[in-house]
Image (cartoon, rainbow, N blue to C red):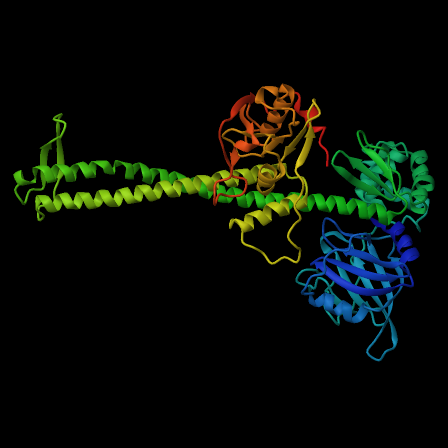
Length: 588
């Protein structure tokens, strides 16, 4: 995103207007690369976010308070010592670059006012926040410490002289003249470049995205070679477009189908299939942009991590089931051991001691059976040995059947978790699933400052007949929806043979039998049951439906696990053409 020198120049103006003369009340470090400065104002407090994240470096006033970790870092404690209670003197951008000096006046140990500077360097992978004594130009400390082994240009350690990040050898657009600009663009290094690339190499404070917008605003194709741009185009850029972008602030967000995609301090050329949203301040635009984008990124990351853990658990359960079924198959062959024992018991008086095997006629008179013997045991002792082996195998078989049933239950449960994760749309829904996994023993409980997530509401849709269709978002919600919220006269639906959501079709009191249920509403509810299931990609899915009164929960079963009888089945296509229209009826 273009948090470049141009955006910073407009941001610094706003910060000086809003925060200059105010006091720093508290300092937090919620992330290893982020600070939150709570600044006391006449009408409440403001939260200044300073982040040096390599991808999301930023600085703005946020409406979100954020978390205050219980254990502050050493750097955070040092900033609290030096800056809490300090008065903000102003924000200064350095040479139109991505460096901002936050100047403050703070009381020292002798209770004398002393100027200090918090240098915020938003320079990509080398970004840093450094507290310096401006009178001695000495570093007090930095968020990231490093020496010459990592940087040949400078080192960041307490007591070392502060050296700014290396210069990019570009022109400052606020101080250079047209001849310098023209000659630099036409230099040998830019001879074969596009005009947007040449602008990026020439001017400080303009990101590649901003440079492309500069060209578009000037009516120049961004990918045109520099050689095709004459004095008219370049003079228009230098004397009209660039000064306007520097002097005028028009905060704008570019929004796509999934929310904001870019923010600008000016009005860009409207991209195809995108919306431009204007804001009163750049701070507000940035706060909206970063809150929504970072929330989406956190959501995707959290869902991916939990999905990966659930997949690992499922793979382990599948392997366990494979071996258990193999062991059961072997255990089921133990019936022959019982036959051996019975034959030896019946014909033992005919068998002399010391034989290693014997062939005896079967009880049904059809054929004979060869039996291995232990020569040092009597026929009766050999019979008891086979009976003991049979008893042991039978016990193992019964235990294996119990373990297989339990493992299959876990598999169905984890598959239902996968469906819930796939359809989750908010961090709160993911946290509900995490809390459920911890409660069921599939995830290790973590010490979190947050309270238990509040239960969300089921999805609600409207059928073409005006009936409500409720769809559970997770196992807890499925159980609550089916067994607590719905009425016994409502219709319950679930994809047959697939993990998925419980679906409730609310029926009016006048419906007394299954024949009176509107067919279109039944089909639409069945389509939703198929869509919100593990079989959503199948061409045809069987959906069972019955009255809610026929659904029961087995004692001791996992959340969302139920049994039902007296049901009917309808076959649907989860990708039915009616699905988009049904999904559009969703209501909060």
